[in-house]
Image (cartoon, rainbow, N blue to C red):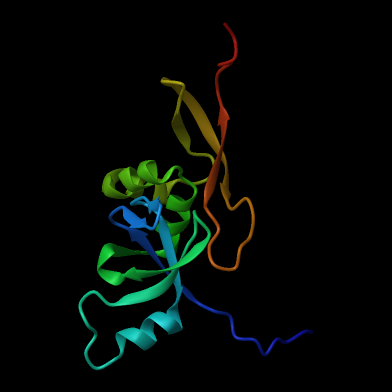
Length: 156
């Protein structure tokens, strides 16, 4: 047996609630921000956290580290962060986050569920055949759905 003395890092997940202009670039609302739980808690436990305090987060979609105002973020569960990370671009992700009922429905999807897929403005029936990540990353992997369509949609 192999035992590792390395402690696994736990992360916290947030969604950017407003567009963030930095220099010549704008990071749109809907970006997923990640921070090590220990780093976040260390700052939160200070005697008097100041309004407008900034912490260094990793923006998953842009793959950059930025100091962000904590007030511009809403915390997500790991499940919601994974589901939302699989959605792009950021404005679509943000809309899904704001549509609480759709996000709740996405949380409940399981293998074998019958679903409807919006493909090129057509609603097509399908069956969920896969839920999970497409690649493993230490901080967060998107939770993707594999859908087997139940129609010959490529036919004329």
